[in-house]
Image 1 (tube, rainbow, N blue to C red):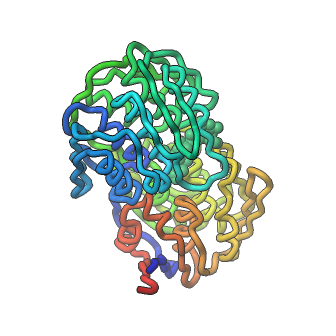
Image 2: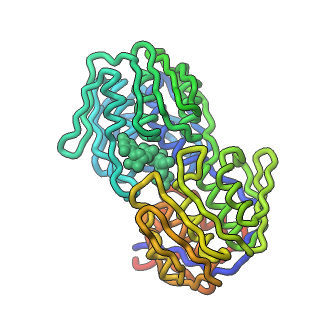
Length: 420
Ligand code: EPU
């Protein structure tokens, strides 16, 4: 049995839609909860496959976990294993956040090399460097990360690039290390700040998250806390783009508009109305869009996770747009799928040139990764006729009830089951 997403394009989205909790915050905060000496309650978790997989991993490790109505209660006091399971680890990127956590608990950890979207090489050298600087012995052998330490000690770590994963892993190691750690050139993404706030709510001392320099006073005992995850920056952006793509009039609620500044600026440049008030973002468009150039950058620059849905939007803008991907080496695989719908896109190395056409035509397409799936959804909403998207499992990894949300805004979207 497999499912596809069928979209009959052309409906103008209108109404209000609430954004779910942040995936990339959730997948860092859930493993971090194991560091507490008492139960944690984490609210506003997105009900997505990546969260379900992490819950299975926590249970495998011995934690007691309940998950209902987007709220997780986790009792980590029963965790008794330091080896993460292979099958589950391979299903997502963030599984390797368990390595510093289990290292802190047991002085050792074995975590299979993580999976996640195929965006080209995704090395982990900066994570290794961070953990080693704090006194861990790290080996990557036989497809797993094996870490151990007699004692973790705070230190200074300079990251060669502001990697999200390496910043998370170094922070998570540092809270268990004796003394002070300073991370230079750390990632500044909103989920890094959310992780720091969560750790602080458990009694850690993390300062400077959201800037280049993060300071951690380690070795403090951590207790369970009650914490609410931030809204998902990329889901917010995807909904903003979908609204603009359909000439829609949509209010996105429960969002943090300041997280969206790079996208909002680009939508304004295209001729889309973007209004912001408290936690609401209003998008209105007449569908007549100007071409623009975008370059992905680390936060607060234009997020790489939004370049794919943005490419779909640019397919029918007036004129020629360029998209330059600077974060990942291979994030243009979705282009071939958009071409099935008639898009005029040429890729030159890390730059895609999108020449605006009158309209996309619905076609069978595949979500080649999570955000490629978002691109196919945006394209399907804009296109004439029916678009049938395969690879739904990718989309469900990161977007909670996306079909439901779009239907409530007036889209003709249906999940179709095939086979038994
Ligand atoms: N890099 C290295 N060495 C390292 C780590 C990273 O060379 O040790 C390079 C990578 O190859 C890449 C760049 O640095 O070229 C950025 O990688 P980063 O570590 O920041 O990315 P990540 O932690 O693997 C997270 C998100 C991604 C998001 C990126 C960039 C999670 C679970 N994943 O990945 O999210 O695209 O940051 O913001 O937080 C998604 O949600 O669809 C997604 C892919």
